[in-house]
Structure formats: C-alpha cells, structure tokens
Image (cartoon, rainbow, N blue to C red; front, side, top):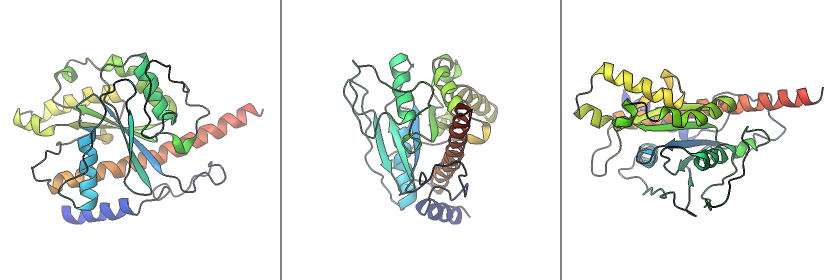
Length: 271
C-alpha cells in the first residue's frame, strides 16, 4: 500500500502546477498566476535537519539512494543565507541559514526572506541594515515565501524547557499577520525512539514545538533524519512526500488569502 501511495504522490508533485489544489484565484491580478512557482521556506535552529530534509525530498521524488550535497552557510558576514532548490517547475524549497536565538538583525533577515527582499542565493553584509517591510504590505506575491516549514530538533533539551518560545514570538506573530501557513517538523525521531520516549512524552514535545511555531496539530510531523549509509525506508519516503504536498496546500491557501487582503486594502483606500 505504501509503495502505491508513494507513486501517486510522486506523480502529483512532479506534475504540480499552482492551482492544482485550489483550482482558482478569484482575486489575482491579471496575468499574476502565469508561470507562478510556489516558494516553501525552511526555517529552524542550526542543526535541526533542514538540509537533510531537502536531500530526503530529492531522493523520494527521484527514487535515488543519495541526494544532493546540501551545505548551508555558517551565517557569517557576507555569506549566502538563502539557497533555492527548484525541485519542479511548480515549487521551490528555500533553505535558510540556521537561526539560534533571534535578535533584531536576524528577525529582519527572516522578514526580508518572507517578503522576497532577499533573493535566492544572495549574500548579505550584516554591517548594513536589511531594508524590508515590517508589515508585508507592498511586496511582490510571487517573490514571497508562501508556506513555512519550522524544523525543531525533537531531542533538543531546550525544547523541553520552553527556551525558544519568547525568542520566536515576534516571527510567529508576523507569520500570523501575513496569513502564511506553517508546519512543524520535529526531527531526529530516531533519537526519541532510542531514548524510549512514550506517546505521552511525544505529545508534550509536539505541543511545546507548536507553541514556538504557531502551527496546528494536523500540520505537525515527526521525522527521522536521513543518515548517509542507512536505508531510506518507504515509511520515511512517504512521510516527506506527504509533508511537501501539505506545504503546497498551505501555500495555495496563503496566496489566495494574500490576494484577498490586497484587494480589500485597495477597496478601502479608494473610498
């Protein structure tokens, strides 16, 4: 059964075009949806498993035993902080540099990525202030990030203590204000298994992670990280493909919501 589901999902994702899920965008500007590609942002603490996830998606889509070598920058001055992986014509994954505890500059960088003001594979001089909209108004929709996958290492002791929540509150509120769909990906599930984590403990971990990300239970997934040399199981292949499909569903919802809000603002300004 899982092999059949995997094949169905692969076909859907490889043939995906924006609108395949929502069908229509009644508030789109004329020509806006032509050659439109969904952009899914991957955010998380350094070492949370974003790059491993991209490898897993590539392998699952292409029936490969090894994915591309994805190496993210250290976040030092002048380095690349956003790398784009256009996996099909219909959607692109955006791998961002790992963020630890957010400060003002990091918050602005993330907002600039959400708004599309930091382009794919741009370097950034962190001695200069990042210029971007704090409200998400006046941005170009096709350049924006349309859904966010928040990666949280499930075995990170700081998660248990709630250490991240206050530091991520600003970004969580910004995503909510923009209407951007979010998903919570709890990685390193294999470490939880080896520690004998029971279902109740897993439930509490998921709840703690969602307090950070703001996503809902249906958009929460546990995931085992891809380890070189180990077999990529059908169970994990299926899970990563399901995550991508769900991210596309959220992306189309975000696009539709953003277009409707834009139309309403225009109507209000013309009164």
